[in-house]
Length: 108
Image (cartoon, rainbow, N blue to C red):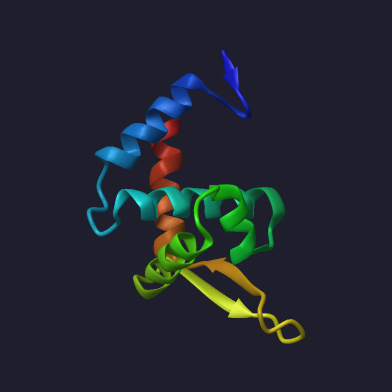
């Protein structure tokens, strides 16, 4: 049975990863936001912090705080737009890519 772009088995593996799999450095909320970032970057290649807020469906201030925490821990980098200073774009860093690989390996 399909749910969006994933089947329930993939969803189950994703939940298990969130709750139990390695990377004790990240809290569950950080893992959820990081997975959202990974997915959006695969879909769009360029994303902003606002895009992540919209996708998460939780308070912008909460999402921004989690994004900042992920940036401080070395998973993401945000860079302000030169023309529109209020807009920041997100890039995934090495630690974020390793997280993505671990998640992919779990799902396969």
